[in-house]
Amino acid sequence: MTGPGPHPDLTFAADPLEKRSLGEHIAAHLQELLLDGRLKPGDTLPSQRDLAQRYGTSVAAVREAISILSASGVVDARPGRGTVILPVTQQAPSINLWLGAVHDEHEARAFLDTRQALEHYTIAQAARHATPEQHTDLLEHLHRMRDAQGEPEAFIQADLALHMAIAHAAGNPVVLRLLRAIHMPLANLLRAISTDLMLAGRFPHLYTTHEQIIHGIIRRDPHAATAAFDHMLDQTTEGGTLERALGHPEQPETPLGPDFLEDLHWNLTRLIGPMADVLIPEAASELGLDPDALTRTHLTRYLGNLARQLPDGKQAEWTALSSLLEKRYG
Image 1 (tube, rainbow, N blue to C red):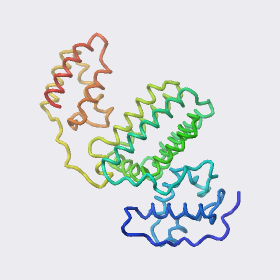
Image 2 (image 1 turned 120 degrees about the horizontal axis):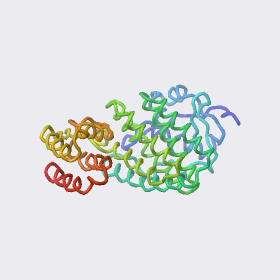
Image 3 (image 1 turned 180 degrees about the horizontal axis):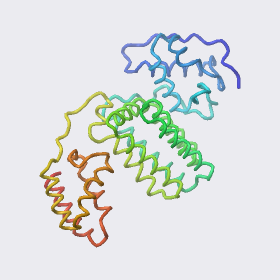
């Protein structure tokens, strides 16, 4: 591997009219250095602290830039090894922000919908075609996510790397490049979402859904793996998480309250007896919540969680009861 040689001039003037963070500016400038040949594949970037000094900004802004470049496949950032420029054949077509940055809820949901479509494909293909060696690689990425608990930046790096590993296992290089392009403008949003979930104590639930994705792939069960991904995506958009990540917190939604829980408990106990006392909190736990925190936003998924745990002989009656509860409280 070649060294970077003399470090190039890393100064630039930010246009105050552009809706870019400092990290996005730095990422775009480093891409320019790569395109004009001052940085080359195989070069190792200066340390994040050194880059921060050269740009006259914080290490956090440089870390954001490295995360953007890593998510788009321009660099490979690994602890103890440094940040290495990847060969152009492994990079996304460009990181010139041609997709635009995510600034409002409409754009964010459009990006997440596109990500869902792409990742449904990669997860299903990985479940069908991943090799045993790729299964081992996916588990190693999963364990790195587990070890990042309480460190949002390390978690988002591990999270993006895991999803890229799934895309590699799918074996379609075009979809891989598209997914990298989607992840690049999403990197900041995903970081904010992950931070919000960790601060709310929901890391275990977020990690568990990733476990379910990977184990579904290893069992060669594309349906279970994609369903787990959908559950993970729901976690990132419910309960005001997405709005807070965008810097536009909404008023908290009012919980359904004791009337709902009493109604639910009475009906479910009549249907299955004392097991209702176990299933009511267990179905809420799958959403990362206590029963008394359930809101209208959670209602359909919560009732669906209960349905999956009931015996087949109770399903018809529960369908009628849950429909009644949705009409009454939804």
